[in-house]
Structures are given as C-alpha cells and as structure tokens.
Image 1: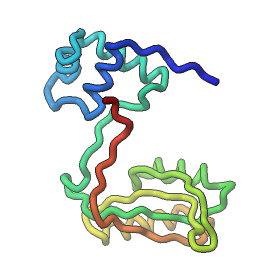
Image 2: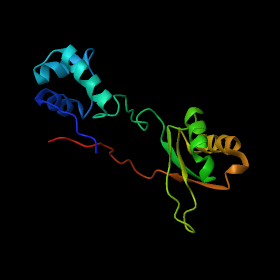
Image 3: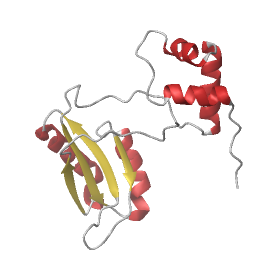
Length: 162
C-alpha cells in the first residue's frame, strides 16, 4: 500500500486558498502567496510538487460553457465493443468534437451503452451535427447511441478541505 505524501501547513494552506480557483488577477500566484504568507516561488514549487506526487491532479481553466454561449449540451452515449472502447475514446477525445469522454459500465438490457462523450453546442442543431460526425467516425462499431441533453446546471466541485 502506498504511503501518503507528507504535506506541511504551507501545503495545506495553498490547497485551501486555491481549491475554489485562482484569483482573476494579473499575478494569481502572488495573490496566493500573500494569502498564505509565502512567496510566489514557494507557491509554484509547492503546487508543482503536489502535481508530481498526485496530490492534486491538474491546474486548469474550467470555463462556464453556458456563459460563453454553449447552451445546448448533450451527453452522447454509445454501445461499442468493449475491446475497442479505449481506442475509440482516445479517437473521440482527440477529435475536437467533445469536451471529455469516458468508459462506463453497461446495465443491460435497459442500458447497453459503455462509451460516454460530452458534446457542447450553441444550439441543438450544432450538437446534432457533431453527433452525426461522431457516428461517421465510429462507423459500424457503434451499434447504437443516444444523446441526453442537460436540463439544468449542476455545480461540480472536487474535494474541499475545511
């Protein structure tokens, strides 16, 4: 069993300050440093170390797609051969047509789908066009598919430290 990495009080402070997002200022790491009582170099070094150790998975922008005009959002679900799902998922992820995709368990006979891929569009016709392109990419290996449209916005967050 792997041992958990040692994190000190500065590491914990950096996580607490950044877990809700970086400040929208010209020098966000300087702002974090001010809040935790460290230097910008320490903050960046600590974040890189925690990334390297797997304590945090990524640092990246999470745009609100509704705010930038992508209001039609559909989770496309596909029934593909289990032996091909990893390769097909990689193909879709690299296609530029989806924001993310992943493998999920089937629950036959009601739910035969194992490949999920999120499609965003400015309207449903744009999502449907992308869906058609994806169907062409997957070809006959996609035995069936559906698209499930978002009906409300859910706030997504990861683990939060108190």
